[in-house]
Amino acid sequence: MTHHIKQNLGLLAISVALSLAALFATTSVRAEVSAEELTTISIPDTVETAIGTLEFFDGVPNDATIETLYDNLDRMRAVEVYLNNQGAASLNAMRKGNMGIGADTSSKVTITEQLLKPASLYLTGNTSTLYALTYLDLKAGGPLVVELPPGMLGFLDDAWFRFIANLGAIGPDKGKGGMYLLLPPDYNGEVPEGYFTIKLPTYNNLLFLRGSIANGLIPAVENIKTKLRIYPLAKADNPPATKFINMSGKSYNTIVTRDLSFFEDLDALVQVEPIDAIGPELRGQLAAIGIVKGKSFNPDDRMKKLLNEAATLGNATVRAITYQPRIDGVFIYPDTKSAWTMAYANKNTSFEVDGTMGLDARVLFYFNATGVTPAMATTTAGAGSDYALAYLDADMKVFDGSKTYRLRLPPDVPVNNFWAVTLYDTQTRSLLQTGQEFPTVGSQDEGIRKNTDGSYDLYFAPEPPEGKEGNWLQTVPGKSWFTILRMYGPLEPWIEKTWRPGEIELVTGEPSK
Image (cartoon, rainbow, N blue to C red; front, side):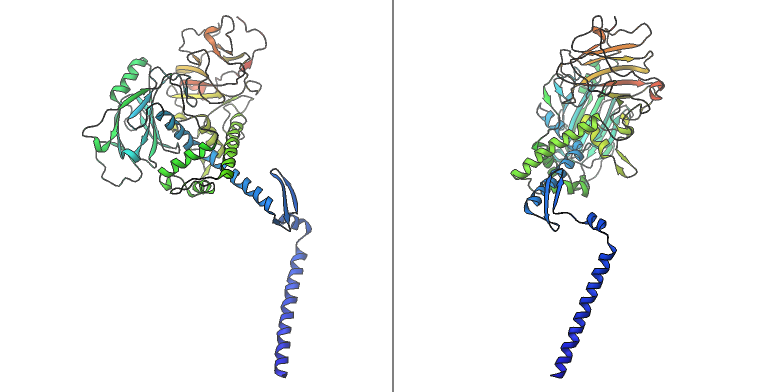
């Protein structure tokens, strides 16, 4: 008995000692943490937030709060998916649009035989150069051969609209034309000789070509239609014909949507492409909203509602970034209050600097433009082209299609070839649809007139100012617009910014005759 009593007393002593140690430890911790610090790591029972009132019991969210927070989390992740996959969605929308007019295989090429016209919804396309493009499906056809004509300027972009390679004058054929072999990402077979060989990271890819019309549009079209051939390597001994579809004046859409279909189309793309076409972080964002390679995408009614909301918020967010960018390298003349901007922030076509992706710069480009190649941002005096965009007027206000505006280009516009100004619809970012066949005016137009000092005054209005018909671009009351100034063969004064266009000013009275 005495032994048991001693044993119990010993256990009791140990228990008391442990309890005191815990008490002292707790007291010590509490003594070291101030009330202010506890406030920063705790959460009150009721919190007012941007997504509503959140309620807790000693830090534990109630059921209604949990539902609200998960809705917010899913919506936020879906907005990020919308923004970070804008390039993939845009290329896919272009592919679907062209399939709708018959370009449903790699060997069917769309071409602007009469140049691009406003009926076709294409992101900021121009009306001054000949386009030929096709969407290559290396999943269906395997390795593809491209017989490229001479005189081309082109490139390849992958399914996420990332630059892969240049073709033509800035590619390995040096503008002489040549035989290209395009290999799918899973290709492990022999590679025949005699080709410029390019292995692509995705199955769906864009082949984009421009043809010079310096010697006339008709011969430029014939050069492409008689010499461009695209066919499977497996049929190289007896290649099928390449077909051309004239898209000039065709009414169809290639613009990314703003609803659930955005995510449905993105899922369809993910199911086709290799899993390593994108990295784990981006795949994680997709998986968080139910888009996983090898699994069905079946959002329930709750998730469908959130995805539709996210598409609207994402679309609205890119419009905010477009009109009021808060990143460096967008404004061409940052030293002054100028509205002129560039499509590529800091002329960076990879959108990456020092291992960091410029998220706003990337979505700014993909929402408003298509086709990625470093050549579009590398300005060589007297060659190529360079662009300036104006989304706002001289007072940094949105353009009103019911009003009259004037743009003055100072004397001696520094171009080796020509310049052109084109109007775009702010909703579709495509050519503005008006009573004019082409919403473009430029130095190649016969009716354009210089001022006596060699400068040009261009007018934007619903009706032409008297005597200014040749220098006028039509706008639409009730709609806004924006414009792009394209400089073909820009010279040193443009590149060095010693010559610069005026700002687009609201005309309050009648323009001078």
